[in-house]
Image (cartoon, rainbow, N blue to C red; front, side):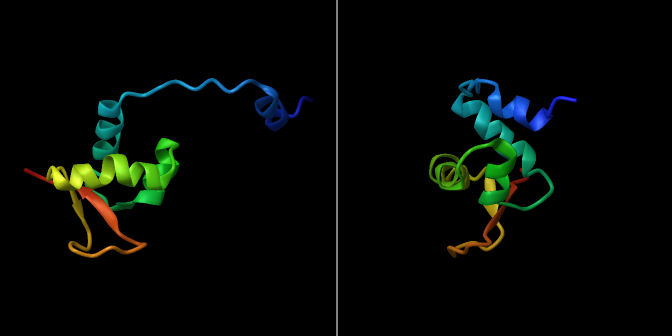
Length: 85
């Protein structure tokens, strides 16, 4: 029986570029009704948490589309939820 993990490791990786708008939409959808940290979002989306924070999360907070759980503070456990209109 072939080793499925080995097959995946041996297969070439195919990266597809996702538009920034699609990434923003994905973050907002994931954070609907629940707080998620940057690390949790990064794991679900497949990107580095620092990259995600700097390029998507912080701008979405500034735009008022995401709301931090602990406003005005920088914490490792900071989590975000989609802002409701």
